[in-house]
Length: 329
Image (cartoon, rainbow, N blue to C red; front, side):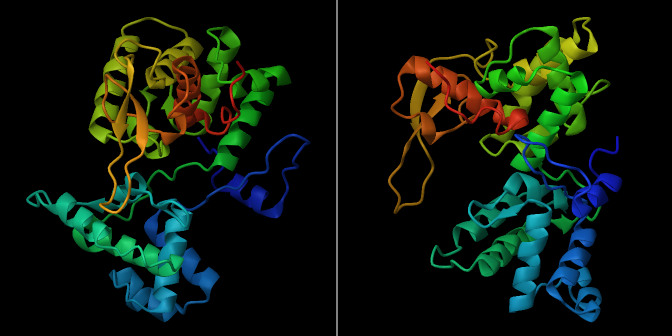
């Protein structure tokens, strides 16, 4: 699949793809390997090739301004850094492999991140120091291509493309924006199309659970996420289904928390893990998989409203920004 990489990257860069009214403009990321991101960022920031070859490619990242902003740029390109939300740990972990005998790498990395003072507000410095926690504590750098999470703009473009490819009525998009994904052939094929184009799904292997976890910023517990997802996907594979229906059952229903018994449960309120100086905020989670999905946005909503809003929130794993409009009563 050549989705958006190589040729399409050039087309987007040159503006060759027209944006029709109502269609979101998009950006595309042609960089998926660490060294490629380093090279591009060094070029963008005007850093000499000598530093690139003699320091950065030798895994040295000193605390000078150029190096700090280089690390921030790499994080932005590979989507493991955001100036507002900080480090996206599920994304940066792909680039580091712990030694088999190292049983403390997670604790060391977390202690390092916890020690980062909140007074450090400069984005380059904060990105650099956060990155070094992984670079120095988590494991060895892996330079092969890795999955780069799709942005909201990229997801919107994919969704619009799939609507056009399948010839669906524009009203379908409005329906999906309400968080309503009916069990019908058109929706089945729409979900399959989005999964294929984002490389989060394939007909042969089904949902890519590792990538889905990286794509999902609101998923809290990796172990619970993967165990329950794999259990659900396995149960769907036992059935003989068409390609579109198989995608709908495994990619949509398995990742919709209130759709299946294994995810269903009474909503409750659990405090978020916070620093000692922060007042815990109430978080709605499903009682079954504790810590699976978390969102402060639903606190105080009526239970019926919570269910609809929670459903829309959870669909953002794959259908980000389709369902961020408030659901109608």
